[in-house]
Each structure stands twice: as C-alpha cells, then as structure tokens.
Length: 351
Length: 266
Image 1 (spheres, helix red, strand yellow):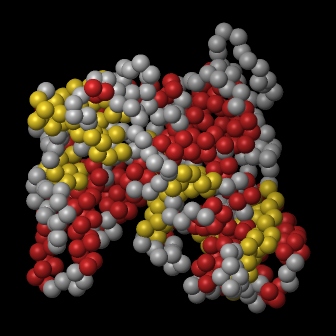
Image 2 (cartoon, rainbow over the protein chains, first blue to last red):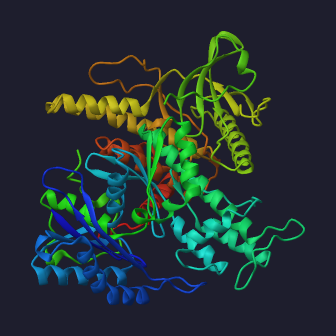
C-alpha cells in the first residue's frame, strides 16, 4: 500500500510518500519533502501568511514528491492529511488540497491526528516498541504512554508549549527564524556559561512555561539585551549575556521536561523514552534525557530533523496504519479542527 | 545493562544491616532501614543528585524540596492527618565525593500501595469475567468505600492547608494490608495513608486544591481505566471533610475545562 501524506498544521508544509509492502517487509519512505515558511526576525508566523504559503507551494511539492518516489498516481491507495490539531488557516488550506487530490484521482481520504503521526513515525524510525513518548514542539508539550487502544496523556503543559516559549524568547532577542528559532537558541546556548535563576514550574506530571518566559523576557529587558542589533560579546562585571539567558532558559525548561518524563516512566514502569516533535531535535535535550534514561537502566530514542520536525511521511505512516484497519474519512467529515486531542484517537492498529 | 543505584550518603554507609532498596521513584530512592533500635523499621528517602541537571539548579531544587517535604509532613502529623512522621533529615547530603544526596528518614508504614490494590482488583475482575449481580455489587461496594476513604484523607490534607502536588495511586497507601500475592479479590479495608510529599506545598487557595484533585482524577483515568467511573466517590468522600470543600469542587469543574485542546463540543 502507498499513501501520500500532507501536513501543514504550522509553518511547515510537508508532503511525504510512504510504502507499506504487502509481503510484510518494513515500511519504506519513498519521498519526504518539506518547505518552511520563515518569518522575519522578531516576528512569528501569522496564520494568514502561513496559509498563503501552503496554498502556493502544495501543488509543486506534491508533483515533486511523486517524481522523487518514481510512482504514478495509479499506485497511490489513499491521501492522508492532518485533521488537527494546529493553526486553523494553514490546516484548512492543506485539507482543501487533500480533498482536491482525493476527488481528482478518486482516492480515499484518511484524516490523521498530528500528534499520533509524530508518535507512529518515531516508533517506526527508532524501532522502539512501547516507549514513554515526550512530544515537544511549538504547539504541543505532552508526555504520552500507550494503554488499551489509546495514547494516553500523562502530563502536558498547562499554558504555552515549550517550543512556543523558545520561539517567543528568540523573538525578544531578535534571533533569526531561519532555519528555526529553536535551533538558533540552541547554538547560542552553547556559548552560555552563567546560570541565572528562573522559575521552575512542575506540577505533578504537568508543567507550565508562561511564567518562565515572562521572567526571562524581564531579565532581557533589565540587562538591555532584547531587541535588534545586540552583539553576543561577553559582558563586563558579571552581567549575564544573551548566550547566558539562552543557556539558562534551556537548562531550566529541559530539566522540567526530563523530570516529568522520568516521573511518567516511574509511574508506568517503562524504561524506554522516545522524543518526538520539533524541539526533540535539540541535542542538549537528547543528552539530558539520555543521562536520565541511563541512570534508570533504560535508553532514549530520538530522531533527526527529517522525522522530528513536522513532515508529510509521519501523516502517511499513521494514515496507512489506520487505513489498513479499514479506517476512512468520508468527504463530508473531512473538515479539520484546531482542537484534536491525542487521546481522542482510537488506536485500532496496536494491541 | 544492569542498574546500580548511586552510593548511600553517610551515616548509612555503615549501618548494619545495610538499608535495602525498595523502589526507585522518579525523584528519589526509597530504602528500608532501621531507626534507633534494629527492630524499629524506618523509611529512608534519598534524593540523589540528578546528573542531567545543572549542578546549581540541582542543589537549589533538592534543598528546596526536601525541606518543603519535611515541613509539610511535620505540619500534617500535628494536624492528625495520616502521613508518615519525620524522624531525621539532611538537606545538603554531606559526603566526601559529593554524590551521596540529601535524605529524609520517616516512619515506616506497613501496607500496600493503592495502585497495586487496584491492579490486583482489575486483574481479578478481568479473569473472573461476568460476575453475578450480588458479587458485582459486593466488589463495587468495596471500591466505593476505598474511594470515599481516599477522598476523606485528601480532604483532611487540604483542611490542614497542604497541597500534595502529585496525587497518584502510587502515592496512596493502605495501612495494614499484607503484601503477599493474594488470590481472588484484594482487600480494601484499612487506613488510607498519604505518602511522598516531594512536590507538596502549603496553600489554602481553592485553585491549588482543585488542581490537586484534578491531578488525582487524571491519574485514575490513565492508570486504572476500570476504576475511573468510581472517581465520583472520591469527591463524595472529599465533600464532607472540611468547610470549604464544596467551593473547591466547584472550582474543579473549571479546572477540568481548562486542559489544552479539549473538544469544544459539549
């Protein structure tokens, strides 16, 4: 079976083609193409502009993906698309594209939950069977474990997502959004040495980031580090630098993430961790998680930017798993939704 | 890969017999040791330093949490809430190699963790298939009783002005149950004891109290799907436990609505 996956819940437009061989051999990625809408430094991506970006690129990307996969439209079994959660306007423009392809080629539609897409892709790439999943991105922060046909959320953010916290601090410092604000913060944090005191907010297995963002923004303002054209030189008289703030922010919020993941692992008795989502590319987070897992006698699974950051194949992968169990999304139910919880999905393909 | 726990901090490096490791929680290692006389059992909670954390942050959090935990426990014992009593502590975790970790020594509670009780009960319900009306009624009555007991204890905790911060079924114990592998339906009688105050804080705001209850509700939903429908009896037990309980329960409704990306229908 072959599926095309279309993903556009945030500023990345991804088209992926996935093959599940009929003879039970491992699934293959035939094409994985992504185009990112990059906003100028100091700004975030607005839904309207992002949707326009997706609309103008989707046809090119689908054509390119088909060519790269060396398949014709006839070989495709279904069109998978992100049903949610995500930003409304970008989601809608991709859903329109998916419906159009479905009607044009006479293929079935499969609506996929974005978070489940991340989990299934992570499981496929790393080969981990039943891990505790930390899903961290610009829009989501969840600690998930599988139990009786659902991906259950053990812990999550109570306000903004961890990636959103990083992105917005990058905006405060006017760090470039290319290739991603989080990536640039990570590079800058490597130069940081001094740890400044920031709030540490873990509540059980949940956590909160908005207060930390306000605190670090406040520090940036106090030391005059926000805004455009500031250099990253070390300052005199022991004042924290921009790099120090990035470093402290990362150390604090990643400690929180590792802590809630560890708590979930202790609670369900699992030794494997899988990190998915855009923030999952961060090597410092992977390193910290690795130390924690090692001390528990377990291991951590992470993937690189091809699979961590939003992409089309993860939608195709989760879509194909559902498609194989007979799941279809009729045209009349193919509307997308900004609110679609991970635990709303009935996971028929696992036991 | 075999797991070796971190070295013990002094004075536990030379107690005889050496403390035995019971569980490795997320934050701490729990050991069974003795206090004053070799026949008085005691629970030793060690918070080893977390090598993944920045050392400054690690020290700050460890110190803050162990002191917080001890203060809450002392207060609750005084208020008559059933929690283990504090015997001794060291928040710096002095040792030569500096990796011993801070520790807290507490009264030993003999009994079973509620999570285990429910796991046995769920296993029992699963393998006994369709129970007859009378038997089912008896089983459910037992669960309802335990749920009310849990609610009562959590209410007592809140009345005393303490928030647990991590209410899960792993942090509730039933005093007096034997740990032997029981055949059939597990017993559910006995005092409910709250343990692990590692994330506890002192607060009397109804918001904090409601969040505490919400955390417990979610823990039931994710670990004991079969027992989840009895959660209302926890709230029932909670209701009568102190004067402002009904305000907290009202607030709980708001907290439930607040989770992210909830479906907006209904």
